Amino acid sequence: MATISSYPFTILPESVDFTLRASISSIISYMLNVAGTDAHRKGFGVEVLQGHSFTWVLSRLAVEINTQPRQYDDIEVDTWVNDFNRLSSTRNFRMRLGDTVIAAGVSQWCMLNMETRQAVDMTLLKDVYERAMVAEPSPIAAPARLRDITPTASISRPVVYSDIDFNRHVNTLRYIDLIFDTLPIELIENNRGMRLDINFIAEALYGETLTIGSTSEGNVWQFEISSNGDKKLCRAKIEFKE
Image 1 (tube, rainbow, N blue to C red):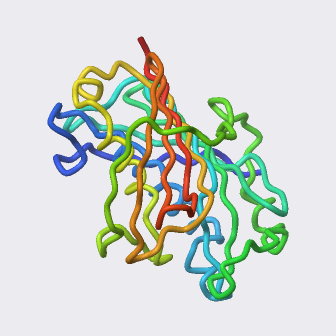
Image 2 (cartoon, helix red, strand yellow; image 1 turned 45 degrees about the horizontal axis):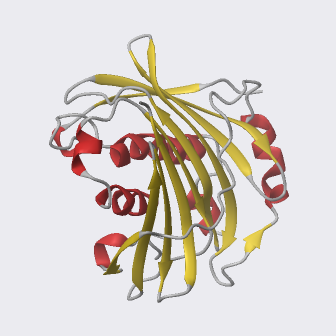
């Protein structure tokens, strides 16, 4: 069994929004960056997979944020893997400001064949994964399975160069920014904590047109992103603290 890995960061100006706090997408970016770094250090990074024409894709994510760190705060992000099967693996995160946990996350990943765009049996990595496993429970509840919604509002935009990543599909963080772009700015400014669940269903590719639909009830907002009218890409749910 391995141990929990910790990575230090300073919140730089590029990571904050107009409140001088780290944006939600940048908080999640720190988590996903340590996922890549930790996988690389433990022998199953994307560069290893790409040698076999495979890659990592994020299937579900849940993040709870209690406090958004401020510009120039020094933080640490803990990460560990505690579950693995032929279909997916679970990677966990804790973000700490000093001794205080300010955010936590649970992510579920699968392997994709880059040529067929189909899922790959992950037992190919059984040996290396067993050495990387940590006997520590997830810090929050696993990502919820989200259902279809009936949007009451929507916006549309094309997929452009700056949206796509090394997998040549829309980057995870771009989805999160698109979701937050639909929210009232006062809700973001006065955010006192939240939980975000997001399910990824299909890939959004360069040149497609995205539609971001949303609906809300009280402090709960739900979202559905589709492309070219009928291709469902992802669903998300945000519950803000009152």
